[in-house]
Structure formats: C-alpha cells, structure tokens
Length: 194
Image (cartoon, rainbow, N blue to C red; front, side, top):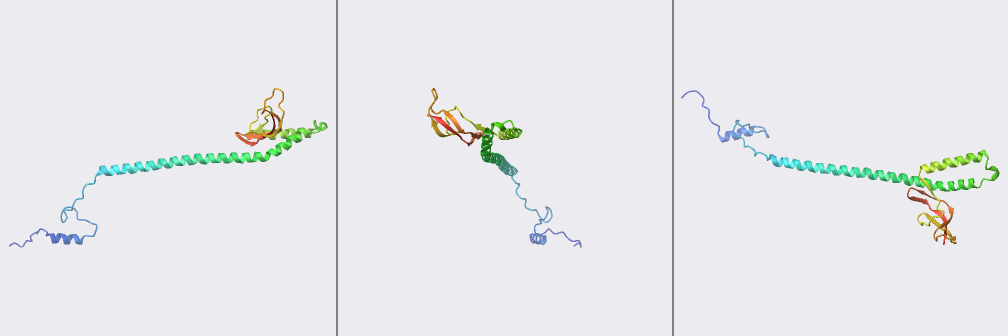
C-alpha cells in the first residue's frame, strides 16, 4: 500500500455536518458540498400583469384625486364669489337710506340757495356717490308706467285707472327700488291702477 492518502467521497452525514457549520441563511454554492435545490423559475408574465394592474389602480386613484381637487377648487371659487356678492349686497342695502336722504335733501333745496356754490358742491358729491354705486352694479328700479311685478314692486295703494290705462299699471312710485344684478335689494314702493 502506498502512503498516499486516498481521497474519499463525502458521505451524506459529512455533508449534513458541513451544512450545519455554515451560518444560517447562507447556502452552499453549487459545486461546494452538493447540489443546491433550484427554486422554480418565477412566472414573469404573471408578475408583469400584477404590476400593470397595480399601476392602473394607482393611475385611476390619481385621476380621481385630481378631478376631486379640480371640483374642490371650482366650489371654493364659486363660494368665494357668492360670499363677495353677499357682502357687497349687504353694504349696498345699508347705504340705501343714505341715498334716499341725500336725494330728498337735494330735491328740497330752497330756491334762493339753488345757485349757491355749496349746493353745487353737494350735487357733485351726490353724482360721484352715484357713480361709485353704479360701478358696484347698483340699479335703480323706477317702474312708473310699467306693469306691476310682485317680484320687483311692492304695492302700497291703488288708484283709479286713468282713461285708456291698464289695470295693474303702476301710476306712482312712492319710493324707488334697487337691484344688484338679478337680486332685488329693495322693491319699489308703488301705487297701482285698479
């Protein structure tokens, strides 16, 4: 017998012992202590389909969120505009008695003061005030001769219908009404022919 050591093939017990000495989670590389069991090849087409479905779901969610945000922006803009209009209308309603008083005062200026520079200055202030109110959309409702409309007029009395006049026709305006856009701020107080 020769003194050379013979190379023996490893036994299953030796392979098991060698596998136990490796840290957990590491596997022996192929060719190092035995053939490692190969994992089945993943089905790439199924994974791709799942990824596409997830991407479509995310896209749909994003589009919905974007549409909801656009609707939110429109709603906030509309509410802001309505709030502005309500505030403007409330301010105009509070100014209506001042307008009435100023018009009554200017209509009753004594004849000897009509050409006075002070009265002329007040008339200019009245004109400027009316121009500002016009710029804010205030419209006068002065319906003399029109047909009575209960949405824009308030009847305070009746008069006999003039010769050839229509029943329901406005014969006198007691107090002018005011509107801003489509909204009536104060209906005109009128007398109506019966």
